Amino acid sequence: MRHLAALLFTLTAFAGTAPATAALPLDKTFVGQKKFRQVMQRGYEEGWANLPLGERVNKFALALQGTPYVNYTLELDDRIEAASVNMNGMDCWTLFEISLAMGRLVALHPPPYTPREMLRLIEIDRYRNGRCTGKFDSRLHHLEDWMGDNQRRGLVRDVTPSLGGVPLHREMRYMGKKPHLFRQLRADPSMVPEFIRIERELSRRGITYIPKSQVPKIESKLRNGDIICIVTNWHEAYTSHVGLASRDNKGVLRFLHASKNHRKVLLDDRLSSYLNRFSTHAGIYVVRPLDLPDRRPLAAR
Image (cartoon, rainbow, N blue to C red; front, side, top):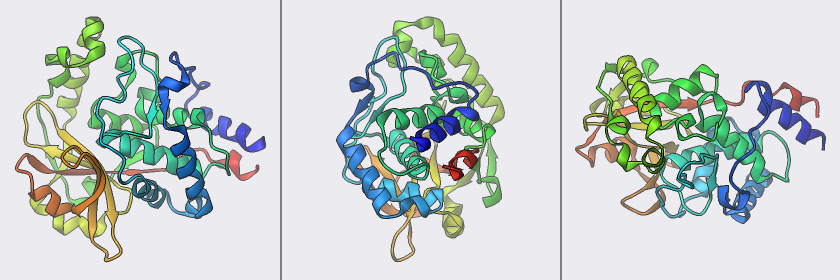
């Protein structure tokens, strides 16, 4: 049981508080426990824990190929927000979240791995300051907000500037302008001003991105498991899609994602070729995941 105590210490030390208790039952917040245990067991037996984090993330995402594309898996209740995992259906964002959490978990201790550990790792990644308050506005709904919050806590690094990215500013107002599209905002309109504030702040900050015409030049610098955020040409938002960098056995840097068009998780074309298929794709920014900041207690288990 020593590794469980060390895990709890690690998961709470940098977050500052004990894990939140989900207000929804586990059978609602964690779908596909059998698949979770099977994939985690495979990762442990094949030695993925000894790989760098990006390689671990890539391995788990590849293992999830064929999982059906399902949207809105996080919208579990009109008013209660809770960290959740659905192993049986994923969208583009939950694919990388799940792969990242599994990649971190396999390196923390040997089996068995529990759904509650996984949910805590998801909470650390998905929610502002690593804490789900039970309210919809504690979730990081914009990739730009997610990147900024996780980077501040030492969990990811925006590598786009080092790849020659250029600045972009845009007036974001999607969620604040169209709250009727979101289940929990319809149920509790009092949160709408907070989303307006968040989008104004993200508009002021802007992003750094790589235009898609420049992506072929930087593909050699990308690593397995890098999070590839697709910048859109649409107004009122910066990004429209997200996936992972995955280099195949021929060395080609491909786009690994949960595809709405293909209705499943798949390893798609070369990244630059994928971008050129869609006129709405303007380019990318690249976020590199990092291991949990404090792993020292685990070394002594």
